[in-house]
Image (cartoon, rainbow, N blue to C red):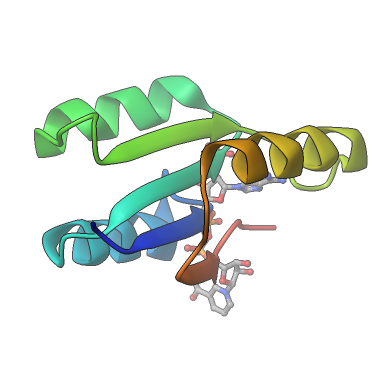
Length: 89
Ligand SMILES: NC(=O)c1ccc[n+]([C@@H]2O[C@H](COP(=O)([O-])OP(=O)(O)OC[C@H]3O[C@@H](n4cnc5c(N)ncnc54)[C@H](OP(=O)(O)O)[C@@H]3O)[C@@H](O)[C@H]2O)c1
């Protein structure tokens, strides 16, 4: 079973580069951002396998969205091995 990494700000900047590095080291990626279109373009440009990388739309400045994100992640994953907080702003 692959290790699991959660990366906020994964669709741009440093977060995106970290996602690439972790994907290449066989992590399963949970990526967080506000712009799903940007994520889909990234997925296609890198030819990533959707079974190993998922996107959850969330504005991390919005507490209500964060609460839903927390519940969803806890339901879908047994554990997070690596947490990278790279959301800009
Ligand atoms: N770059 C530098 O030189 C530098 C230096 C020191 C510190 N930092 C800090 O390091 C972190 C990463 O820097 P960066 O330059 O790589 O960041 P960035 O390019 O500004 O942002 C990376 C991604 O964060 C997402 N994001 C922004 N606000 C968000 C929000 N409220 N909720 C969810 N996602 C959000 C955006 O994706 P979406 O459009 O999909 O939401 C964006 O693609 C930032 O916190 C920055 O302040 C950066």
